[in-house]
Image (cartoon, rainbow, N blue to C red; front, side, top):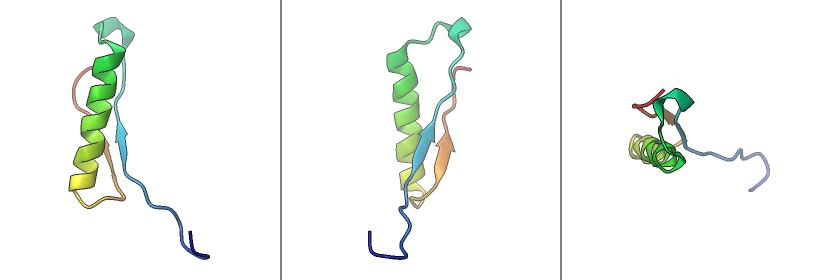
Length: 53
């Protein structure tokens, strides 16, 4: 990065509750969907996935 510039990123977050029986594959799919939703809404933001937990 050029001096004085901060990195920008988007973040997708998914919570997991083992009592739901949700697989790791499904958890990552929800986090990935949240990430792309954050990117569609202007980048540099974050989204919390809906669903389990």
